[in-house]
Amino acid sequence: MKRWSTRRALVSVAAAGGAAWTAAYRADRRRIDADPIKPALDVSLKGRPVGVRAGDGTALRVRVYGPEDAPTIVLVHGWTCAIEFWTLQIQALQDEFRIVAYDLRGHGKSAPSSGGDYSIDAYRDDLESVLRATVPEGEKAVLVGHSLGAMTIVAWAADRGESLLDRVAAVGLFSTGLGDLVTSSLILPAPGVGERVQQELGQLLLGSKAPIPTRATPLISRAVRYIALCGAASPATVAFCEQMVLSCPRDVRANTGSSISRIELLDGLDAIDVPTIVLVGREDRLTPPVHAKKMTEALDEVLEMIELPDVGHMAPLEAPEQTTQAIRRLVAAGDRYATPVAG
Image (cartoon, rainbow, N blue to C red; front, top):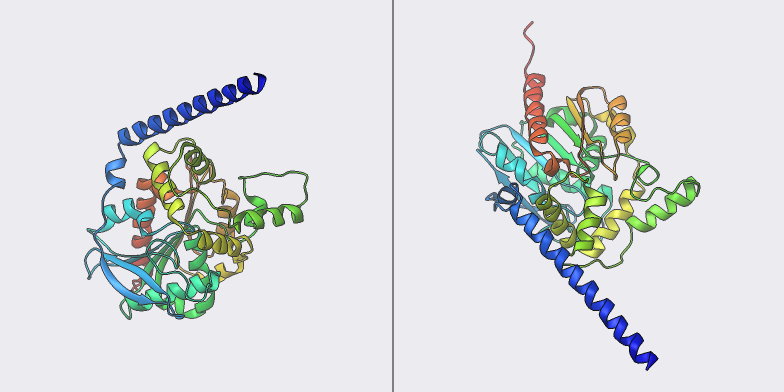
């Protein structure tokens, strides 16, 4: 009798938990559907495909938006994201500028790495392949990267050296860091455990191949908000980011995360000698403003250092207007930089 009562109690608790879970999911969906930003996030981008293969044969999904005779902006998304991460910027800018965007290897609709290589060197070389295929010879492009995308740009610049001045008009480094990413992260602060232990724990976390759900849930939604966005992020914005993160294959997420956890690229900023905007959300837990300040101090041609209040790691989605205006200012600065001064 006692065993039967215990079993019945457990069933009752499980039923109550399931009902609460269902109620939370339905409430989340109502908030998402009512979010004013949702229609813009749902827009299907209509870019022109360009066939690009990386040096190791990996097929990359590349799209070009806007008029062919306009200044070129190259957008490089971050870890676990895809071209659509830039949807609000592409929609706002594609009537005026020629925009190139691509899925990093293994992300979005790009093919998995043909050799299983998700190192920063592989991402760097992929950027070179995209630039060669999409930026006309003799033209300077504005390069804008978010998170891993910005790291990729810095790694590419360090590798290209003096040729950067002939190919790049300006650079945007958004929501990123170039070293010491684990110990500076605010995701799992662990005071008192020691820097070495914290580094090892962070590397294990970022490189974890543990499965995550492939469908949205109230728990995953709140975890994504905590890690990648902030409390002020709108419901549809959180859901949009959640879907991108859940769509990233487990091995790509893990192998790339492992590479990011060990990255040291601050010295690569020496190669960036063009107008640069550094942008960061004040509530960014993954790459807090301390990284933006380090980069600003190390760069020679800082146009602006922008710190956005009430914004987390996903600044182009959380603060689309400010991010878009920063890109416009980069294009304008690049035009001035490329124009010879009359003697």
